[in-house]
Image (tube, rainbow, N blue to C red; front, top):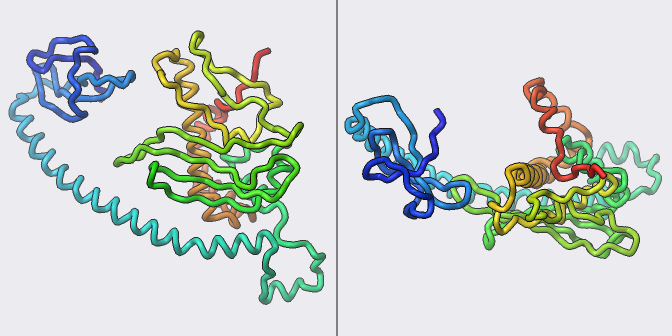
Length: 333
């Protein structure tokens, strides 16, 4: 049952103006003759009441039972807090155990060490002097369905210089950081490109904003002459589009700033912005949770095959809607 959103006065259930709504925290407050009353945020970041209509019960009796159930839920929530704390400690423990393995992978991929063993000895006579595994990370990224759509021909030569990708948790501000390490290349001066996701901590982390490295392109080598959705024309409340030839994976490092006043956006523009940020966060978590831990499986295609096996035909109905790319809309000009 979907709640009906209205502003009500607790005393009698009559409507009040938004600017007169009190600023209590979000919670279940009580009941009135129309239904349950909640405090909640409106879309304009102002607090209003939510009235959730319920069947015509004898509400005082129902309310007593609800209070007991809420006490039970309170105990559950205390356990959940402890669970999340312990899970964070466990994650940190295993993240430390992973680091030496990632370091060994870096050395092998970039030809800093040679491997030894039965397979290596068997092919030793056929070694042509190639160091490491060329185009390792380019292949890894292109084999992932989420990232493949973001990599264009113009990006591939530059991504051949990608040496490593790392991620780390951040405490101040809360969030996580992705780092892309590049060999010296003819495209930009930076040796490391970063992307930081700033999170609002809570039971369910919420993305506050994303920031990225300003890329120092060499003259004539810029792959991102216009950032995707770079600015909002607040007067018209529409996003600025960019032409197809400016699409590039490297727009990932220049996410749009979150508008100071979202209520200046019309519904269509606000929807596009929200979907763009969802796509960007999806890319970031895909790199963090799938690409970095399982890079060799993406390189060989094992992870790709496994992904298809698990998905089956469940998502086939959603593919058409998910294919729309809100970050790289074509100009009608």
